[in-house]
Image (cartoon, rainbow, N blue to C red; front, side, top):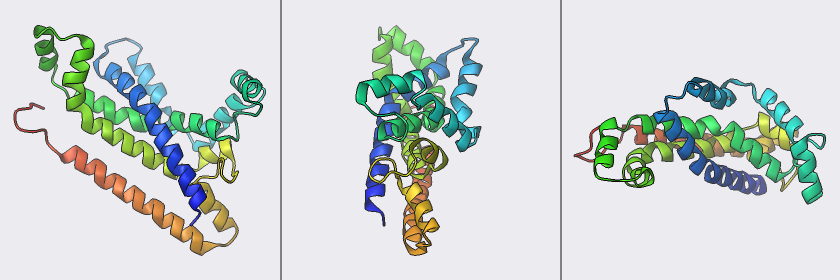
Length: 224
């Protein structure tokens, strides 16, 4: 087991989920409640990482983070090293390719909230923010938690984008998925098998957790 790669992967998963939690709540709520004419375009753009080949997405992210790009040159001037092939660049890429995995469950959860509750909240004099905290989040928490679980699990298993943007730098960008590939290339099938079994178990637990969250009903008295 490559414990260093596993630790880095876990840190990457936690950081990605922490960034996408507030962003996903805001974007998911907007997509669930908005009637803006550009909403279908926004949904399509945010879902692109689901259907783009990882190498294609990784290529564009690598170009965007390279020293010749504006973000890449700005980051290099600020820190002295490039954004590509660094943990920070890996985190940026992870946030981008995980957007649909975090956003879609949250959007569906907000869409499932009965519109009558919003009318009742306004009748009680609740502001938009108090309605969010007291009404919407307590009802949408299953979708929010499901999105976070999916984000973390997908981060652990992502290979193509991670390899394109981060390469395989030990302690910096070598995640457990990259380590599996390296071990196979070195014909160390035993280590690759142990790490693959770890990701398999994590994936299975993810599916069990999300299935439980989708099947769990609201307490008596709440309407769906």
